[in-house]
Image (cartoon, rainbow, N blue to C red; front, side, top):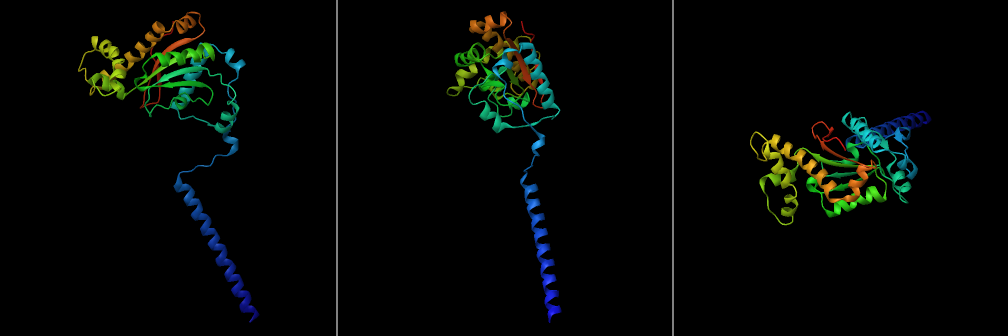
Length: 257
């Protein structure tokens, strides 16, 4: 009788252990299926937000170089996991970004990721078609004259819906006025363009996109005496660029003054 009891007890323990193992496997499969990846703490980049002193020691050229290097990391998918929550808390009492980026509203253009940059490093202004208006200019002046940013970069991108709509002459509510600000680029790009000047022609869309960035740079110089003076004094740099969605690469379009 005692032997049977011992036998049943051992059998119960074996079955119980097997159930626990199967449950662990099920949980592991659930984690895998959820798409969640756990990162070891040692693999997280524990970087600090840029300080006022560090910002003051930067030059426009060094900031542009850093953006190029960061974009190279993005293209190669050589990205790091940052201590984002800690950076938010540490940057809560002040910010000293290196640059201000004027980008399109497009959700496929993640500006900070494109330049492999963390919280507190960049001012980002976003508007459909990366157009320039009074509010954008005021924001740029604040970023550079007040907060010390060293670089203004206007970032266009391929397959821009705002550019296509401007080419098509779309008129709809407040969109009409916004697209009117892209029309000068449509006209300039079409002057020497050989081919169909329609939104279904990707080459023409690309030409207008490039021209639209250049127009924005010209408008910044023309409409903001503050930024123009800072550029002439070599305190900041104005740069135009276009983001290639297929490769992730940012191409610089113009040589700064």
